[in-house]
Image 1 (tube, one colour):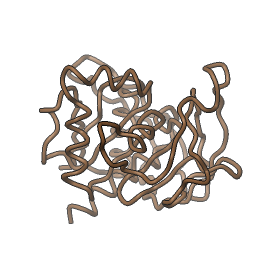
Image 2: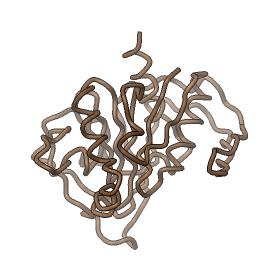
Image 3: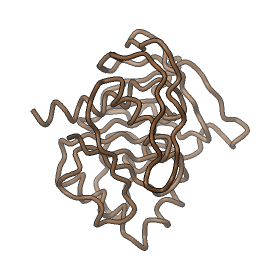
Length: 229
């Protein structure tokens, strides 16, 4: 059983949960999603982690009462080979964890660098990341979770290959300092790097969970599966 923790601080956390459910279905994988709300929720049984988007300062403040971010950073230090997907604000936290913690990705990042909410946009992103193919192509209904959230049905769509452009959704997005990138570039918006991979840590400045393309979530499941062999 693959256990994936999702930091439930703010932002598109439920959409990430749905995306993982869909990706697991596409891969015919057995996955348990663990909603992380306090430090004690994350332990050695978590195989991989998602840091969703949102507002990074708000996420830091919201985590203080239950020490969730401290617990997450401790887990990442303790299990450095376990994969983490950080999107938008999650990418900021990977690059700038604070509290004298060494960054988890070797790149500088600037908050809200694309501008205010009204400057949000969608654009095709070229990706160069090994992701398993979608093995199923069907519409499915997912059950409600324990908080009575019902995921949207997975829309029927063709399997996405690595050669297809990814629908990048940029919402008050951060930007990487292009001259500071000292890790693998895996997603490009024209000539600008918008996704990097540093060891087991994948950081994206856009929101893959807001699309029906599950390549990055399939990557996370695939990395965990290989680590557990």
